[in-house]
Image (cartoon, rainbow, N blue to C red; front, side, top):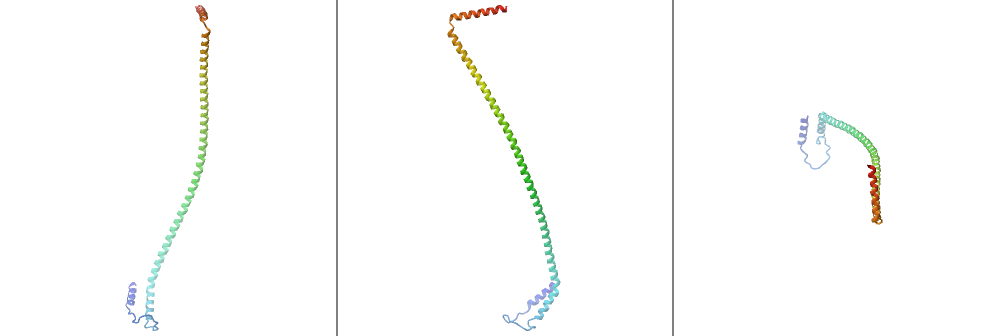
Length: 187
């Protein structure tokens, strides 16, 4: 069939052109090859109809196949998009749950830490009070010792000033007598 078309185009291409230049209306049917043109077009239509029909049918099949493929890809993409949207919504829900749980946990930790801080503060206050009491007791004991030492020093100085030699002999004899009685009682 392609041989026929090739031959027809070759014949048409070899036709001599008119010797006149320019365009003009020629009413002579034989000179204008109107009959030849009608025959060629009829022959082309008759012989090329199956070729064109097959060509158009193949083209239609290819287009329909491309449309079906595109439609399938569209459906797959739509399903994947819907699945991704569902997963995104699920992730948002889980993220909200995690945020809520973390707030609760943070609040519990805050309360726990506040309790620990309160206990530590109370313990430190108690230790401070115990330390103050201990230091007060220590200071009071030190003051007592100093008062007693000063009182003894003063009493000793006063007794030294009041005791004379004769009084000392009497106190010594009295003490020796008391000591002698104690020794005699123990025998």
